[in-house]
Image 1 (cartoon, rainbow, N blue to C red):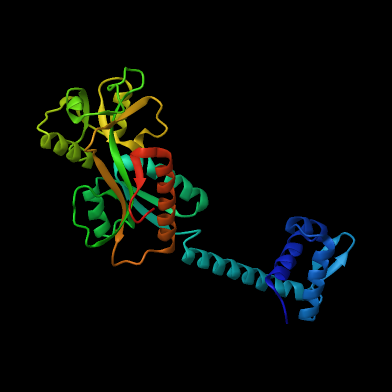
Image 2 (cartoon, rainbow, N blue to C red):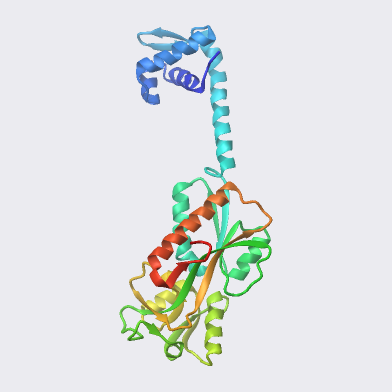
Length: 313
């Protein structure tokens, strides 16, 4: 016998409608093609499956015996297809991604949008934490991947780190207010004299900027302390003060303007971390490729304030 799944699907559909014309429409087949498939199936099985009449087609005893078997075979074939797709990580599965707050409102939003559009069946989980906490969650098995900043020198021997982007920190102010500098860059001393909105102490950025001011012997004028990233951007837009932020967050924010810091500039490296001793599932590998592609696009859009990390170019 040479029975195939297409023949069985045609047989089950004709049995469901009791009509070759309606079954052909359902299967997007020409009626002669459908008739030939059923005739070939009957020939291979050595039995007539339908009683054909002007008013419709009904199952013969042989057809009634075949119907539950055909349905089961089609269901088994679909189950195998789904299992293989799950193993490939394309239709079902889960990816647990961690990212810092600044990345969640910029890079990660585009990563997840692109990934979900291509693989809507994959369940996505996001943890928004500082880099240190994300590495803890990665080490404990709570995450598959983490987008972190690696400026804090945290040991990452247990992880595989892939640097993605090197990004400058810039000074932002309200687009509705006069510029904070007349030139293309501003000194750290000039920034220290401006009213500043600073992040919570839990932010990696806060440690970086505090260290820079301290190293220069400067004490910044702070008007608001302890805000989260989205709040900082909104307060700056309304003219409450200036802030030092990653250049990435300026993308698609017309209410803000930015100016670069004079040398030596402040930078951070964005890296993708995963456990070194765990082989990534297929869905996780697809997510890694999506992140790398999106990071490249971000670098192209950001101009001089962001570049691909060495090894990712």
